Image (cartoon, rainbow, N blue to C red; front, side, top):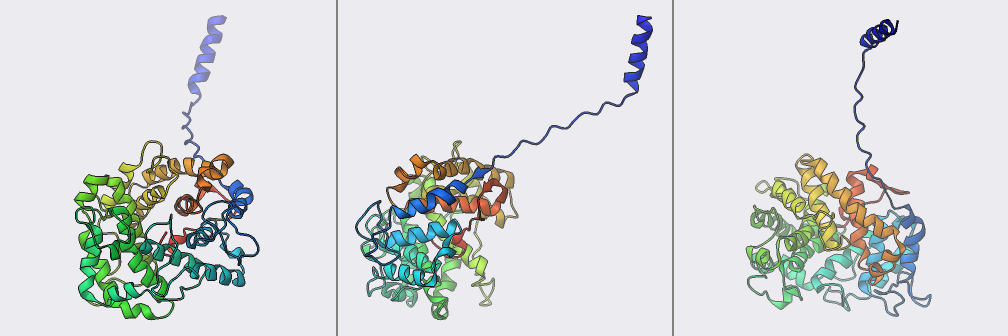
Length: 395
């Protein structure tokens, strides 16, 4: 009887089709920045705001400081823009913020009292981008930049001196303190960024069109085909390839702005390709991915401008290549966001080292905005964040 029962059970089971179940795909992490938006952002701003006796938009560079700084107002504008909260400002507030920034501009067009904020040329690019986010303009044109743009014999010597500063020291008037490829590339970008930001709104961009038509093809011609970056052999030997990532990012941001806004369409002058696409996107993508550490950082801790430099030069070349190595690009964002969003939502980190200067935070929030732009489901936020470098070509 028992044998017969076993036989019947065996026959029954044999007639049932057993389907193998497919394993579920791994659940991707979602990084939540709502605490930063709702609780921490306003608190972060208030630690730099000067007392009511100062005009609105007056911020110090350090917490509880007593003097405004040309970078700090631009820093706050950038952070608000990346977090998509800049529209909370009224037009009168924007006027006041712009007035605070422009009080630091001299008649020569440079911004003064910029200690702790890079070179004079860098300040021109960064501070002006703050004005751009506020939809405002500098008070004065830049005398030196106008001279360079209007004098063809100065074009190549200026850019070459900055590109090769690690091999041959460049004149002080164009370095204004930069002494390696990274910060000197910021100066290269500042030139075009200034012309774009200050002249496109007034029609004067055409005045410098010959320079701009030279600038983009020339920079394409001197990019390093091995790394895809703007980087000399001397720079790589002295500071490592990571230094090239930091410098090239600033040039990239100008190139990307021109592409997205079609300022100089390909072949617009009938002779040259002025589309400002990256010259060696495959090599650039490979370089940036290879330089990201296992922890997810390009810098020592993942909380520096070098990290937005790295992720930007991962996402943007990939997009130009039709999203080449896209799964690896997503992984790169995933790893970096684990570091960055934790810092933004951890009170001890955000209001510790990251608050020692108002200029530290724009790099972090811009990295979040960049990754959310390409992978919106990766970041949980109240409002979609904005990659404001697509609006102003400099950070």
